[in-house]
Length: 254
Image: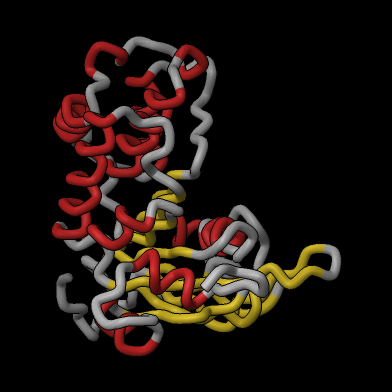
């Protein structure tokens, strides 16, 4: 993880973020931050609030209570400036049906005002094995190809913050290996990554720190070693064992 320059605003700061749906508390005073070059792994049971948190950060859902700052820009007050620092890969990307793969990259470059974007686009098409699909329409792409296109569009502008929601869904083994490497390299270049996944092995392998949510609340945030010291049932516990210890339900075995 790269050190954060104190004179530069954090890529992501979430403070007391709360969200309610029809009386249900989806997020409850959630507070955390992600620093430049850091991969923060977001984990929790179904319904814990992970996707709600990501959509709120991305500006898809309005902020009810609390605040989200991206590169020092309050998402509720300076949405455009905040989103210029941000790229988001949802769990099921839906490209434009009538734009080709190439046109998606051109559109992304225009949206983020990226000059001389073509060399990086070519590199990304090669990396994610989309060279032969460059003329294919978004509506013609398979689930895995849509995921790869979403990676290309997210990586293209070199954003300061990337949100990834179940990024390996739909990928074959070769695509999974390529995506894991690409996520590591993106962080090494200084991008902050918020990675949400049920694949605890992926989080354990990639994340510098982990954030555990349960019923909309932050249960833990810190390194895996810190989680072992405070939450682990036994010394040397895996993230899976820590996860179950932190989110235990009534009736769980053990």
